[in-house]
Image (tube, rainbow over all chains, first blue to last red):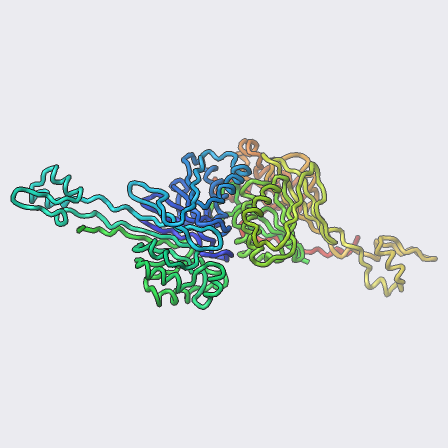
Length: 310
Length: 310
């Protein structure tokens, strides 16, 4: 039942030694979702013991090289490793041509189908769901078409407290009613669902917002997220260049987390001008204390919170 | 006056942790020539302190991903770093389309010209030369069109021994004759060029042969090379799979070095089945003792040998 973010790269456009370009893997109960795929992603996946076999879907935010140049090697490697399961890729529309070129020149021997889902929404839309998870995509504000993603566990169905079953001698029909969220109405008494039933855990959520300039709707779209990854390419003093390049500063990332009432914030996508980003953390924490610096190879675990009441 | 081979990657098709895909940089007196460009080449160049600015030309042996997927990130990065000097790329003919696609989708902001030289020779041909160096390309035997490269310093012009100038009172015309390789003929005596002139150094050479099955002409084409890099994807016992995949074994690489009367042999491009390749070295050395194992991050220096006689 884990929900773990793996950070493979924290560089922006120019990778530097020990800072790879953008890629993150969200591990939801053993299924891996890759978000962005900068050069070297396959090597970082091996280093972080993330199985190619468990790679379920790939989400590309935009088609700048530092977010997608690792896709060619990764697709080839999975082919050579004998993957046969279809691979779903969510990416901006232009990726269709890039994928076509790749398959034409390098696709010999790929024994699995690549299912491509073009992103073209102008407000949050569900792009994928399972029994326990849903993934929303939404537009960001960058120099080219760019999308963010929100991964949310679904609200788990209600359970009935074991001790209540014995105490009140609940029938199967009454248990069914409680699981549907209804009170049990007997002749002499009402047994309130709110007292006898509970959610087994609190659903967890993660949002990925990179690359983007700040814009007001973003905090609404990721409101209440447990873990927010927001790019902070530049320190606060460089808001001019951040605006010109459609990126965010530490302060802007932290302000988004604050407005979104996020649980925790992780910042990354650091400009190569700053090999040391310690002061990025100070700037962000002054506004949003629960901030951490993304680092290559870092894992961020969201533990399951047992939630006994409704 | 250095002549140094930098080995960036030693993996074959599947990169493993600490073994990057194929890429080598030959540094000839400060000019850098990149041979193959597997994923992660730009990061390895930074790690090995190889300047992008000094990158003169790129030579791609063939269009399997493990030999070329790093080219996209490298070209982009040089663009972002403000390169304006044209970049010459030598590659098999199909690369033309790949380059066109890359420039179409990711070429915005590239401020330098990429000059593409298609390789299509069936025997060794000179593809580039400077005042001091020439580069030959020749076909290899692989599953797809593949080329090897031979980098040779040119024979340096003759110098006249300083002590001879004073001893014989050599005129400018006589010095000129000696530098052209002619004897000085005076009325009473012949001053032989072979005694008064010398080559200041022995030209150095490096050949890159990967990927290839063995074939008889190869040893002739690289005959006398000082440093031979020859792939050895498989150990001796796996000659069957080597033949099927058009690769070489340790023994076949060593036999090529022996027949070519190479100075030294470096083997690499190891199959991912063998995280430990110590026994590859034993197998090759049994046939060609001056063998070394390529390792990621290794530098092989060919020192200048002063050569006083002709």
